[in-house]
Length: 329
Image (cartoon, rainbow, N blue to C red; front, side, top):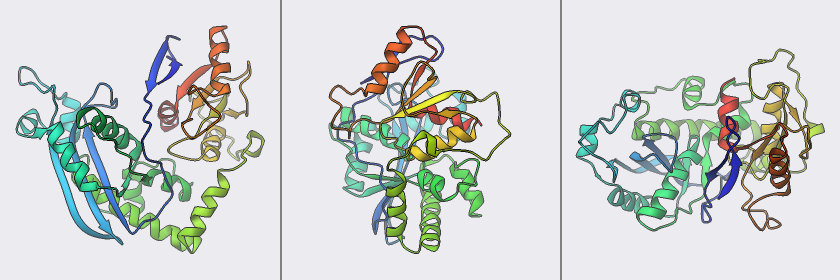
């Protein structure tokens, strides 16, 4: 578990899990894969529940099989409204529908068997993976170790001209029909179409998927703050990163560090390579793959925590909070 500080109160909080056996976010284009999506009662795997799962198996772009099921969470009750109005209006899923659904354990077991060892594909899929990993571990006592491909990450890679990379943005870009949004199977179907469009565009631009993969690997190595600049001159001064010094540590799961640093620069922020008294934000990536780290904390994080305790204006934020901040622009 990683410890950071609440941006508003300055109090210590825990915000990540040690998902030791979690698969990797990969740049890969397999012949066989499963596109997945879930609907939940909220954003936190700790406090919220999965209420719908869908998956679709593909072989060389052709649909082979589908899986979809509502879930009745273990804490579901008919004594009061279980789903808030926002979730009902967003998804169309109601308490009555959940009352007739199978249990979390039964649905997860079927889902786990359905996907097997397939590479998983999804949009902003790390969100889905974290929910599924924690629930599989705690409910059916199995690890979700499948590697996964994020269509949002691919979009950020080849569509730098887009201001946002939501699923609806890709749907609009590729002129696709998108009905029953925020129902799991519908989102799986549209995500699969977007993935195929992205792959075709990558092939057209890079001539081969291997060339694209090599370009991604090259961009991950050796980036420094001095390498990043921006041509933008008009900034939103209300953005939390404007004028702030930002440092990254660990491996980001949704994008490579160079992309994240470029976003900081384009928002009027300043990148730095090391934590100093001038640092305003330390953004925490995943340190699981760094063999030199023994206790889950990088030297940057340890220094930032000390500076925070000494009263300096520095915030330590997890990767997902960084994405929340940049999505507000």
